[in-house]
Image 1 (cartoon, rainbow, N blue to C red):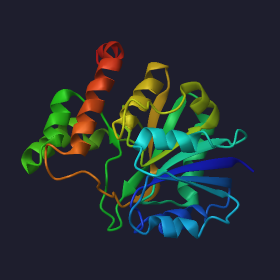
Image 2: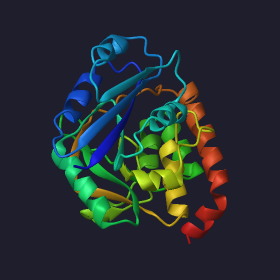
Image 3: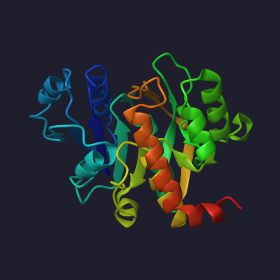
Image 4: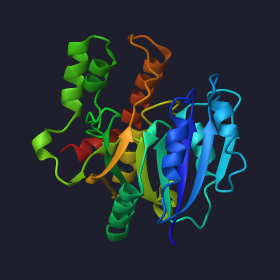
Length: 265
């Protein structure tokens, strides 16, 4: 039986984490390892996670404060069993199912040129989300950072692909990291997340890294999960989260300037 390791971060996730963990426990076609890193939650998340402490396939790390996305995920990634076949990076506000994981894993087995594969997503009301995106530019990110609805929507239009261009197996620039599946051997080649980025765009950076090394990023429409989308950003332009994100964008665009110049030709 194939082995899969789930990497999950929590931060004030008491409304979501139980459903996320229990959905993983329904997976029957894989031996599962679940690694959860809590980023200094101040709600009831810690108490909920403590109830899973005696579960042999779940390892939980409690951090004293929020160390951000990349450092915390790397702590979890460093605990992945070396004999695992797949790593699934998963947000705490997701609900997955065995069928979706089967579809994603089967695709990776048949397509060794693919680094990361991800599913379709809807929220709990069935409303569609867009996990596949174009690589960002300054224009897109500044528009999306504004709390003004019209400007924000314009940024999203520029970032997203035309709906009619989306196929059942769609190669995109990057996938949001709410649910990634990748083979363990490819993770070892690419390495961990870039800790010079605190919160985001760690997903953009990692997909650029994979693309720059010749790998593909693929969205599979028929694999479907629920992503509630727990918002942690503020509804204002100058917030710590938005500032951190914009600094991350500046860093990534500079780091991959040469690659992007060639890629966008």
